[in-house]
Image 1: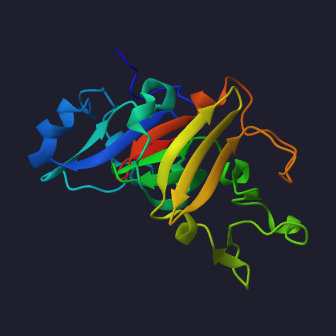
Image 2: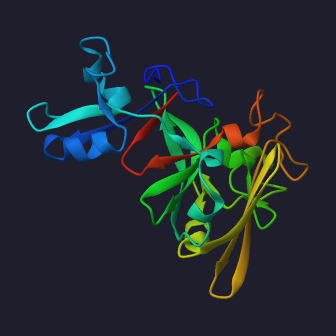
Length: 222
């Protein structure tokens, strides 16, 4: 049995979601367990900065284990549509972890679960995010620093695209997308010469340990 309160999956310790009580059995069938069933210490369910606020009369807090990329067959990902791209997944209680994720038509994010992972995603040879100190040499796909330094050129580019294939190596995961006859290449990397940062996305394991699926309404807690 998994320790749902200390998963030790990539950087993720817990995977939670608030659900309506009327749908409780449906979520149980998908492997979700209530906070009482996983023996969350009494009162911790009220830590709204981690889990969000919920009405105990009509809702409950549930936990599960996210599915890793290498736990799914390849055909479960091929021909999926990309609906959106986000850079703010993951939560540590005082803010976001900056996980990059692609929302698929399965209502799940394909998530790179490592801190500020948009810094380690390259789309058509252009990094998704980086620090403004590098903007004189690199213009990332997205920026959220205010004062004329806020833009998003990625969402419109990838939304509506289809996953045609992918390649997985020890430290690189590549998605091949297509949209309106144009090809898109999305590379999740540990490190790459095209990145301005010298640090690596993770220290231990391989990249397949950090690529996972999360429900669009669930939270990865680090």
